[in-house]
Amino acid sequence: MNPEMLKGHLDTILLATLADGPAHGYAVIQAIRQRSDGSLDLPEGTIYPALHRLELAGLLRSDWTSPSEGRRKRVYALTPAGLVALGEHRANWQRFARAVGAFLDGAAPCPA
Image (cartoon, rainbow, N blue to C red):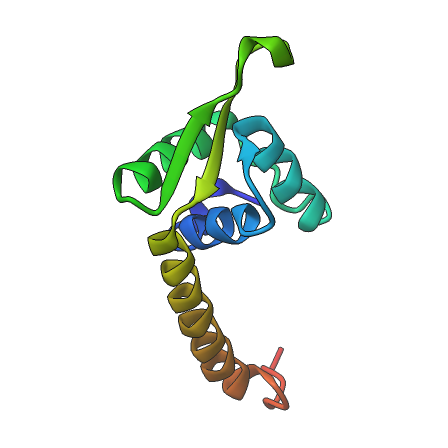
């Protein structure tokens, strides 16, 4: 799937992924790929700027792992504001999906 198709949805996907618990950037990429059955194979150049933007917005926080754990990694986690934002994103998505579903579910087929 083209990353451009995710405009407006990437933040929701990142927040929902991190709701499972703190993770470093590469683990976030892997989780998104796995949860989407490979449909969302997003490059680092898409994920890391979004993670930094969400951190600047106060929705995520990050900490560095200690050197005793091997190579240092930046680990991202939801903040309380991020958890609230995720709830809002979920509610908006559910309303949107219901509205679009009203057109697609049981709709007459398009003439060929």
